[in-house]
Image (cartoon, rainbow, N blue to C red; front, side, top):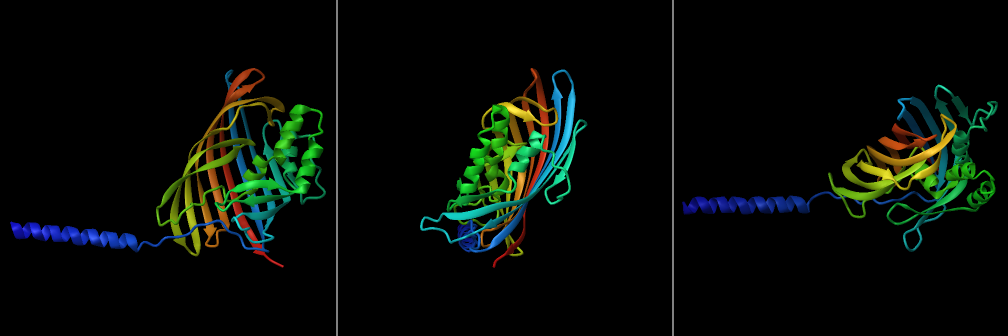
Length: 317
């Protein structure tokens, strides 16, 4: 009996040592933010929105919207002594599509003969984010710490002079830090602050947007692994919610203002990165419940949204 116990103890010690050795030999990865200096990166951002709205009197509204932007990201210099990196962003072109029973719009900025639907506020709000130049300053952790640029400040001054306060506030959202970061920052703050191995998980704060309305919350990220020269991260968007109620939201399908009182969104996101830290592709899917009032009637909306950011090319001079 004594020999059997000794044998079992020896096996347990050997097994423990083997597990410990395997843990010590785990392959880890430094998934840090980075972009090559003096290189232009051309990205495309696409937002697909499907809305179903039900009022308390059982009236139902439905519409679809798709907005695509093409933009360039240039890295003029290396990170500074504190690890901050400045990027120059220039939005190049935009395609806007809207389809509802009352309104249909299809406009591409590269179609120079097409009439511009300048009377539509939602189109104008989307359009103002195009043909802009501004700067993102990234922290060492891969999130946007500052938005700047002289042209951007000039554009804000021009549109701040609009006398109609509702229209002014709605259009200025297109030039806000919140909107520009959401549309044109591809990192979305998913970078881990430590080395990871396969199946490592961590949490982070994330800000997104549902139909031009900011939401945020804590999300769970998981490192899926390294394959074909790329890192892969999956993110569970567990419970993103409205940052603050909006008493003057413009409902483009009805051409009316109303309120947004609550939003709750869930979904998932996939991020593919090159080993140098540059984002190659992001795809996020969100399903949101929105509540508020329009013309005194309560409503509930189900908004299904798909966002993609994809790197089309990189080039240098």
